[in-house]
Length: 197
Ligand SMILES: [Zn+2]
Image (cartoon, rainbow, N blue to C red; front, side, top):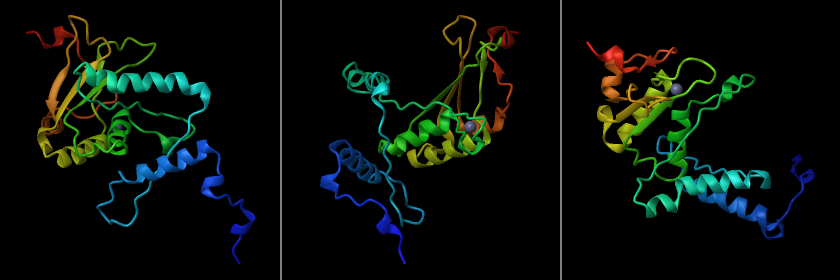
């Protein structure tokens, strides 16, 4: 016996407008699913943001959206790491989030470079750049393959103080990264003097 009848049933058109729009967006997002492996399910998801978050939301749109295109700035998709100590399974690196976001935006086949900036609060790590963890390298490899760049996929690793004269940014490729720059939780010191001599 099904128990589904105990669940409230509402016709789409009887839903509040905001819920309809949310359902429509989720369905639209499903159009961008990358499901070629098994080709069985295209799943969309949508998240409604509370009005308290509206200002941040609009600011994000301004950062990413038409204004940049008008100014001739390249299209970019950003990601931030998510690290919840109570939910280790939900932790995601910024690289992964950004790569996944490109998929959600229907541009997962068009990634052409990734930059990673290491920032650590409250410590003397201002010149520390971070290199991707092994899982992210795998993700980058996947998106690099889809773009056709494979091992040549460009990667830039920058410290927080990348604007400082004595700071440096690593400009490398996935292949080179794999050969030359192992993952190191301590990061990489990018102060210039280490490279002079
Ligand atoms: Zn990672």
